[in-house]
Amino acid sequence: MNKKISLLAVLIIALVSLLVVSCGYVEDMPLIKTEEKPEFRILDCEVGVATPLLKMAVLHPPLTFNPVMALDDVSRLISAQLTATLYRFDPVKNTFDPWLASGYDRGSESKIFTIHLRRNIVFSDGRPFTADDVVETLNLILQSAPEPSPLRVFLQFAGGTIGYSKIDDNTLQFTLPDSTAAIEPILARIPALPHELIQEARSQNRLSSLYELRSPPEELPSIGPFMIQRFAPDENRVLLQRNPNFWAVDPAGQNLPYAREVVISFANTSTEISMKFRTGETDLIDFIPPEDSERLANVRGINIQDVGPSCSTVVAWFNLSRRTDPQTDQPNIERWQFNLFAEPVFRQAVAGVIDRGALVSEVYMNQAVAAGSIISPQESLWYFETPFTQLSTGAALQQLREINFTYNRGGGSPATYGRNNDQVSFSIAVLSGDTAAEKVANRVETDLANLGIRATVLSLPYEFFYKDLFSARPNYQMVVMTLLDPLHPFFMKEIMHSSSIRHYWYTQQDVAETDAEREINTVLDRIFLHGEPGAKFEAARRIQQLMDQSNFMITLVKPHGLFGAKGKIRNIRLSHRCATMCWNLEEIFALEE
Image 1 (cartoon, rainbow, N blue to C red):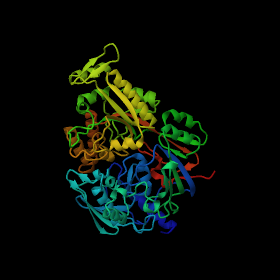
Image 2: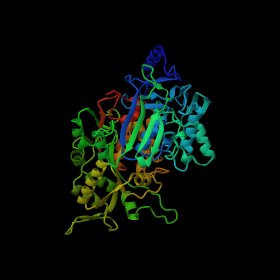
Image 3: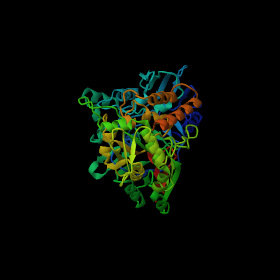
Image 4: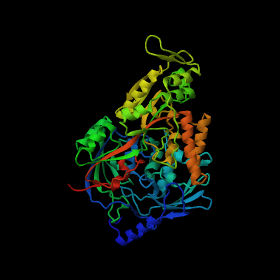
């Protein structure tokens, strides 16, 4: 690929880009949306300079480099630098823009789409990018083994699975089970890995080893802005280096990314991440702990940005998995807990007694809002202001009495007993090092103690936390977690659809087992298929209502997005939809001292 393209070509392509309307709220969908110069993606950013090194820290090491299998936030952040999706969601502009795809043609019934890929681009190791790579990656998503891919849910609908086929090396055809005005959000979840690597791994029955952590860098070819230079867990960091074959350029025609290397170090706590930033060990920080924001704001040479109530939500949920041991027919948790958590009135009482106002003031120092939804209130068209009810201890106890629970104050601590006279008790799992989530869990423990419920907070290391969280038969009882999704309401499907591995309260649930879950599935599909934009907004609001009524996932607070960067850092673009500053890492550069 040429290192420079002519200024005239850049201006022509930029003009075309301005004329192309992308999918924001899916209100205007022209039939043809294809760039005229698909060899390059010209990014609308400040023209920068080569930067030797950028540094940041995250809470724990990744669990995989495979974008098809990544479940945790750190794995997603890093794998996103090694690959690219057909479209990319821009959280600042609130658009879905052509990325590996240069555009598409829409069939007359909005069921068949012809996807045009960028031409003459290559992976970091020089192998050409073609439609075969997309087809094999789609096969991997739908047929992955031994575990299902979290991306599968975006290809499957009640009416069937999206069909796909190669037309030629640069063109694909997608066939949807029903008409849609919103294919871009689906394309924004489809990455591309080299088809040869997938085929080789399949033939050797080792698909699970694709892009794994112990793979040598030469076995991790990248189509994204960066590639793995070194990963050694004992060094507590991963080192990324610039992909010289990356296919995006800045408005002046300079190849991106600007950074030659990126160091992502691993910390034990979110407080340690903040300290590394404060002492100059890192250049960027995502989601500053609220107790550190004022201190950091007074540090010379540091810029802090508060984007308001963010995509991040602190949530709690109970283990509602109905899977049992096939030999004993016993659930992984106690049978009485199994029955307790499935009781809607019990979940309602617990949700109501948690003091969200105290969480906002005590844990987040008023840099958060009480949450009735995982959608930010800043998403005015999608957001439904759920009137969640704060219950007094007496009101919550009355709800429990109505389902034959008993409350005994006695001479010591109060205790609540279930129908079988077992005292209501369970553990609350939280990711170790997530300081704010640990504080929230401790506050929940206190609020439940006032209700006579004995809850015990367990801070679990990341490898145990995530292993159990996404297990087919999880052992946890209750979870408190900082959830970074959804970046956009379209992405709720990955969290809430019963078939998704990230359907947190019941992972890998084959079939929806309650009326509420069945309706949630139907309405989630409706956001993608059928209807005018207004119907999609109504569908999203209905999902929020159903979640509030069912308390499958109890929303607690939405922290403000507090981001920081050294003053010399440029092209930082943020909004409340950003889960990380690294979503446009290829554009970020540092001015010389």
